[in-house]
Length: 97
Image (cartoon, rainbow, N blue to C red; front, side, top):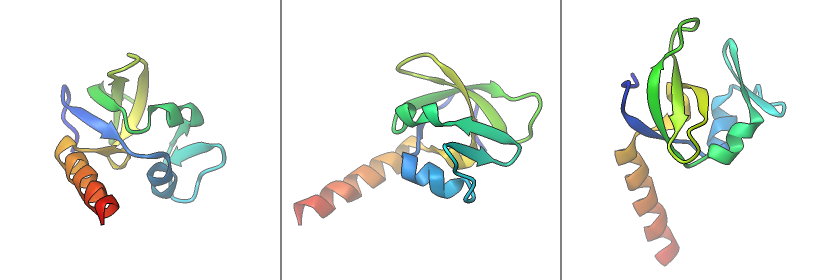
């Protein structure tokens, strides 16, 4: 469960496409909500959760740390910062081999 006021990383575009349950057609379809392809520019950026969406269960309103644009997010679109650091470290160790 996402926490309001906490900061998360948005997954990469490839990860988002996989998480969209095959509903990728220029946009990402996560259940009842269509996430626009312009979210591609946010991939890897930090997102601060600012509230829950009043209409949809499990959907949160978030704001880009870099641009202050607001978007809707679900849990499977975001990565917790600690996990992001682990992924970065793992990727770095692979490139050194």
